[in-house]
Length: 114
Image (cartoon, one colour):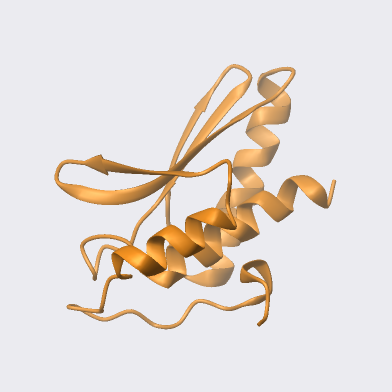
């Protein structure tokens, strides 16, 4: 099976299927630093990254934004001094879709490519 970070997001439509509980558990096992959280009744994937300073965190935020545009799948990104929190979820599915796990894996790859 192709690793998540090598896959591409598929176009999502209103009512797109969410991942099942078993799929979520299996996919999360491949993303150990991510967790499923509920925000305003919507399940999302979240991870916080830490950096030595604001400038490095900002540069990472720019990379995540470029990834989001490339995949046409857009997260919530919170930038603070030395920290970046990223949350992926699928608006059309109103929860977690496989696209979110693909983008989470690609976000992690941004660090390993530095």
